[in-house]
Length: 304
Image 1 (tube, rainbow, N blue to C red):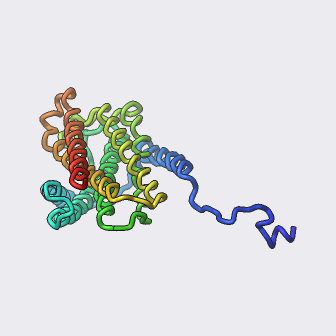
Image 2 (tube, rainbow, N blue to C red):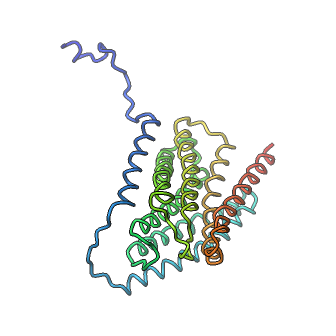
Image 3 (cartoon, rainbow, N blue to C red):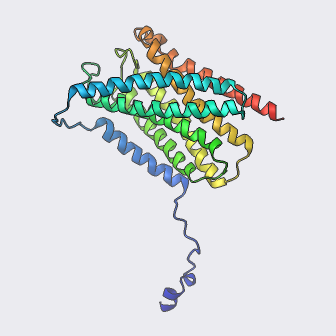
């Protein structure tokens, strides 16, 4: 006993103890956590707390953040378009890219303020239950988180030259958490408590489109998250891989912004026709997916 106490190696203990559990265990744990968060966020009753809120102040903040969000979103679209058109690795491309990421962050911050305002103010008769209202807010939160991830994670692969960086772990867990929350919410919005916001001209959704949106976004974010963690553990990233990681993530943020603009401005025209509503959510991302493939193929040819 004394020998085992003084010399742990006598018990054939591992010389190095790994503090980080296996990726599969982490994913299972995050899945359970996401299920719990989704249940608490969507299904649990919301306490009605009386508070002395200055309504005029909240209207001012909500209106101001909405204008900032709309203006910076349009500026981001212009700057990102300029970055896409500009020659890659050129000074113009880098300048437009940095300005686009800056406006994207401002857009996301104003969206967060607006989301808080929408969560506090009365939604009238737009939703048939508090659960549907929470589902709608949760979808907004996921879209906001995806935009933040796409911009920052995409910029990481051009701003930091290291192939292996600690921030990759944070980005990986962020993407996987967003993905698992979407997977947990998909059956809620599509079947258990169907979310239908066709009377909301700014964000019309049918139960099918709500579930499709969550599943598509979850699959994309899960692939990004696993890729981030794999990159961190491998530590060997080629130049072409860095470019691909940058393009995929930045184009995801740009595609999400364009899709949001399409939905907001064309939503009123499609809200009364459920058979055409899918076009707002499928056509813009499809165009950006094809554009992403074209950009990557063109970059590969230029390097050969």
